[in-house]
Length: 194
Image 1 (cartoon, rainbow, N blue to C red):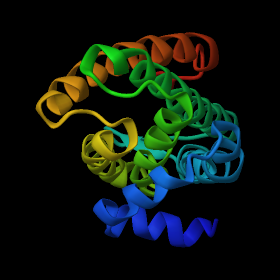
Image 2: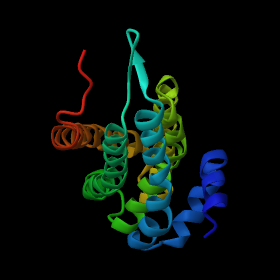
Image 3: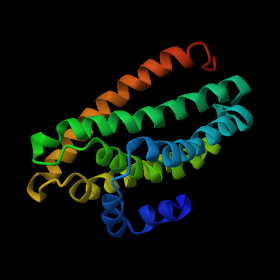
Protein backbone atom coordinates (compact mmCIF):
# COMPACT_ATOMS: atom_id res chain seq x y z
CA UNK A 1 0.00 0.00 0.00
CA UNK A 2 1.27 3.43 -0.98
CA UNK A 3 0.54 5.50 2.13
CA UNK A 4 0.58 8.88 0.32
CA UNK A 5 -1.82 7.66 -2.36
CA UNK A 6 -4.13 6.18 0.30
CA UNK A 7 -4.12 9.43 2.31
CA UNK A 8 -4.96 11.43 -0.82
CA UNK A 9 -7.72 9.05 -1.93
CA UNK A 10 -9.32 8.85 1.52
CA UNK A 11 -9.40 12.64 1.84
CA UNK A 12 -10.28 13.59 -1.75
CA UNK A 13 -12.41 10.66 -2.98
CA UNK A 14 -13.64 8.70 0.04
CA UNK A 15 -16.76 7.28 -1.63
CA UNK A 16 -14.57 5.61 -4.25
CA UNK A 17 -11.89 4.56 -1.74
CA UNK A 18 -14.11 2.83 0.85
CA UNK A 19 -15.07 -0.06 -1.48
CA UNK A 20 -11.36 -0.57 -2.30
CA UNK A 21 -10.47 -0.64 1.40
CA UNK A 22 -13.36 -3.01 2.12
CA UNK A 23 -12.09 -5.62 -0.36
CA UNK A 24 -8.61 -5.59 1.20
CA UNK A 25 -9.90 -6.95 4.55
CA UNK A 26 -6.46 -6.13 5.99
CA UNK A 27 -5.53 -7.43 9.45
CA UNK A 28 -5.75 -4.66 12.03
CA UNK A 29 -2.10 -5.15 13.06
CA UNK A 30 -0.94 -4.43 9.51
CA UNK A 31 -3.06 -1.28 9.21
CA UNK A 32 -1.84 -0.17 12.63
CA UNK A 33 1.87 -0.61 11.88
CA UNK A 34 1.91 0.60 8.27
CA UNK A 35 -0.65 3.41 8.44
CA UNK A 36 -1.69 4.52 11.92
CA UNK A 37 1.72 4.59 13.64
CA UNK A 38 3.47 6.70 10.96
CA UNK A 39 0.58 9.13 10.48
CA UNK A 40 0.00 9.58 14.22
CA UNK A 41 3.50 11.06 14.35
CA UNK A 42 2.30 14.15 12.44
CA UNK A 43 0.21 15.66 15.28
CA UNK A 44 2.71 14.45 17.90
CA UNK A 45 5.70 16.13 16.25
CA UNK A 46 3.66 19.25 15.47
CA UNK A 47 2.53 19.46 19.12
CA UNK A 48 6.14 19.15 20.28
CA UNK A 49 7.22 21.97 17.96
CA UNK A 50 4.19 24.12 18.75
CA UNK A 51 4.22 23.78 22.53
CA UNK A 52 7.87 23.00 23.12
CA UNK A 53 9.81 25.14 20.68
CA UNK A 54 7.48 27.90 19.48
CA UNK A 55 5.26 28.17 22.56
CA UNK A 56 2.15 30.28 22.87
CA UNK A 57 1.04 33.54 24.45
CA UNK A 58 -1.78 34.15 26.90
CA UNK A 59 -2.56 37.72 27.95
CA UNK A 60 0.88 38.88 26.91
CA UNK A 61 2.76 36.10 28.70
CA UNK A 62 4.72 33.65 26.57
CA UNK A 63 4.69 29.96 27.54
CA UNK A 64 6.51 26.98 26.19
CA UNK A 65 9.25 24.58 27.17
CA UNK A 66 10.86 21.44 25.83
CA UNK A 67 9.39 19.33 28.65
CA UNK A 68 5.88 20.69 28.04
CA UNK A 69 6.30 20.04 24.30
CA UNK A 70 7.39 16.45 24.96
CA UNK A 71 4.41 15.85 27.21
CA UNK A 72 2.02 17.33 24.65
CA UNK A 73 3.56 15.11 21.95
CA UNK A 74 3.14 12.02 24.14
CA UNK A 75 -0.49 12.93 24.87
CA UNK A 76 -1.19 13.44 21.16
CA UNK A 77 0.47 10.19 20.15
CA UNK A 78 -1.15 8.03 22.82
CA UNK A 79 -4.54 9.66 22.20
CA UNK A 80 -4.36 8.95 18.49
CA UNK A 81 -3.15 5.36 18.82
CA UNK A 82 -5.49 4.51 21.67
CA UNK A 83 -8.37 6.37 20.09
CA UNK A 84 -8.19 4.25 16.94
CA UNK A 85 -8.24 0.98 18.88
CA UNK A 86 -10.98 2.03 21.30
CA UNK A 87 -13.16 3.50 18.55
CA UNK A 88 -12.78 0.32 16.47
CA UNK A 89 -13.70 -1.76 19.50
CA UNK A 90 -16.85 0.33 20.10
CA UNK A 91 -17.94 0.15 16.46
CA UNK A 92 -17.34 -3.59 16.32
CA UNK A 93 -19.07 -4.17 19.67
CA UNK A 94 -22.20 -2.26 18.57
CA UNK A 95 -22.36 -3.80 15.07
CA UNK A 96 -24.91 -6.56 15.74
CA UNK A 97 -27.22 -4.12 17.57
CA UNK A 98 -27.62 -2.20 14.30
CA UNK A 99 -27.75 -5.09 11.87
CA UNK A 100 -24.14 -4.59 10.77
CA UNK A 101 -21.46 -7.24 10.35
CA UNK A 102 -19.24 -7.83 13.37
CA UNK A 103 -15.63 -7.81 12.08
CA UNK A 104 -12.88 -6.17 14.13
CA UNK A 105 -10.43 -5.93 11.19
CA UNK A 106 -13.00 -4.05 9.12
CA UNK A 107 -13.97 -1.84 12.08
CA UNK A 108 -10.31 -1.06 12.67
CA UNK A 109 -9.72 -0.17 9.01
CA UNK A 110 -12.86 1.99 9.07
CA UNK A 111 -11.63 3.96 12.06
CA UNK A 112 -7.96 4.10 11.01
CA UNK A 113 -8.75 5.52 7.58
CA UNK A 114 -11.45 7.82 9.00
CA UNK A 115 -8.76 9.31 11.26
CA UNK A 116 -6.75 10.35 8.19
CA UNK A 117 -7.86 14.02 8.19
CA UNK A 118 -7.10 14.24 11.93
CA UNK A 119 -3.64 12.77 11.38
CA UNK A 120 -2.87 15.14 8.51
CA UNK A 121 -4.66 18.10 10.11
CA UNK A 122 -2.55 17.56 13.22
CA UNK A 123 0.15 19.57 11.44
CA UNK A 124 -1.78 22.65 12.59
CA UNK A 125 -0.67 21.99 16.18
CA UNK A 126 2.63 23.47 15.03
CA UNK A 127 1.29 26.89 16.02
CA UNK A 128 -1.23 27.49 18.79
CA UNK A 129 -3.26 29.97 16.69
CA UNK A 130 -3.81 27.35 13.98
CA UNK A 131 -4.84 24.48 16.24
CA UNK A 132 -8.55 25.13 15.60
CA UNK A 133 -7.98 23.86 12.05
CA UNK A 134 -7.14 20.45 13.50
CA UNK A 135 -10.66 20.43 14.95
CA UNK A 136 -12.09 21.17 11.50
CA UNK A 137 -10.14 18.17 10.18
CA UNK A 138 -11.68 16.12 12.99
CA UNK A 139 -15.17 17.04 11.80
CA UNK A 140 -14.29 15.81 8.31
CA UNK A 141 -13.06 12.59 9.93
CA UNK A 142 -16.54 12.09 11.37
CA UNK A 143 -18.03 12.46 7.91
CA UNK A 144 -15.62 9.82 6.60
CA UNK A 145 -16.62 7.50 9.43
CA UNK A 146 -20.30 7.99 8.64
CA UNK A 147 -20.01 7.25 4.92
CA UNK A 148 -17.67 4.33 5.62
CA UNK A 149 -20.09 2.48 7.90
CA UNK A 150 -22.14 1.03 5.04
CA UNK A 151 -19.33 -0.41 2.89
CA UNK A 152 -17.04 -1.44 5.75
CA UNK A 153 -19.49 -2.76 8.36
CA UNK A 154 -22.40 -3.56 6.02
CA UNK A 155 -24.64 -1.30 8.07
CA UNK A 156 -28.20 -1.21 6.71
CA UNK A 157 -29.04 2.19 5.30
CA UNK A 158 -32.00 2.71 7.62
CA UNK A 159 -29.82 2.07 10.71
CA UNK A 160 -26.63 3.80 9.53
CA UNK A 161 -27.40 7.14 11.19
CA UNK A 162 -28.39 5.64 14.55
CA UNK A 163 -25.34 3.32 14.45
CA UNK A 164 -23.13 6.34 13.81
CA UNK A 165 -24.74 8.49 16.54
CA UNK A 166 -24.61 5.79 19.24
CA UNK A 167 -21.01 4.91 18.29
CA UNK A 168 -20.09 8.59 18.40
CA UNK A 169 -21.62 9.10 21.85
CA UNK A 170 -19.76 6.10 23.26
CA UNK A 171 -16.49 7.22 21.60
CA UNK A 172 -16.85 10.76 22.98
CA UNK A 173 -17.36 9.41 26.50
CA UNK A 174 -14.34 7.10 26.13
CA UNK A 175 -12.30 9.99 24.71
CA UNK A 176 -13.17 12.22 27.66
CA UNK A 177 -12.11 9.48 30.07
CA UNK A 178 -8.80 8.92 28.20
CA UNK A 179 -8.09 12.65 28.09
CA UNK A 180 -8.76 13.00 31.80
CA UNK A 181 -6.47 10.07 32.63
CA UNK A 182 -3.68 11.25 30.32
CA UNK A 183 -4.04 14.79 31.57
CA UNK A 184 -3.81 13.69 35.18
CA UNK A 185 -0.69 11.57 34.65
CA UNK A 186 1.25 13.38 31.94
CA UNK A 187 0.36 17.03 32.31
CA UNK A 188 0.24 17.34 36.10
CA UNK A 189 2.45 20.18 37.19
CA UNK A 190 3.29 21.11 33.60
CA UNK A 191 0.60 23.70 32.99
CA UNK A 192 1.89 27.26 33.02
CA UNK A 193 1.13 29.35 36.05
CA UNK A 194 0.12 33.00 35.92
